[in-house]
Length: 203
Image (cartoon, rainbow, N blue to C red; front, side):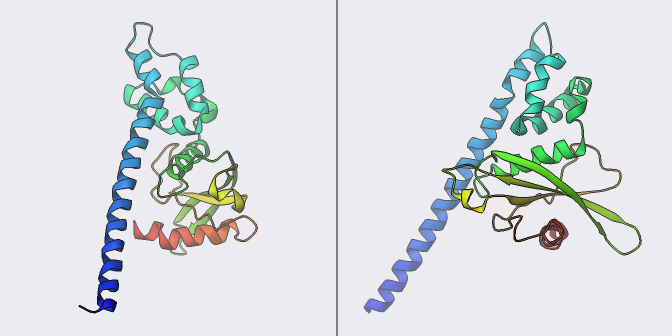
């Protein structure tokens, strides 16, 4: 076996080993994140099982928190206690905001919750030119140092698609964000078009 062949084989083995390690690492982090999400609303589980039961005051801080809002809504819906969920957070926009924050937490994405997030606008697409509309909600977000994405300042995030009859906290199958899509380089309409064609239409 000549030296060139040996080098090629070594490189291939290294690439395979690295890919396997990366896959294992991502799965491990994803499992850890799922456990963390359950733990965040554990106080609600405990209070719901107590003699006193849940109150609107118990629920409020979990609805205010980006990372617990979505799961809190789903949990209360499962309990049949949605009347405890604050009206100000019972909107499609607030649900989409929480969904984006949770998506960004994944280790394959931002691997963090944004330090700041703001709603920009809704972008609507006519699917076939006959008034069959779908909607995407567009946000901008940023993170503070020492996170690696600090250099991008305000980044666009897209959540959707939603329909005219969509309800708050309906699952948005095409939530997505590209850190290179910053507000100074890409318009909300351009980013929604990309997400719709490359993510939404493939699901």
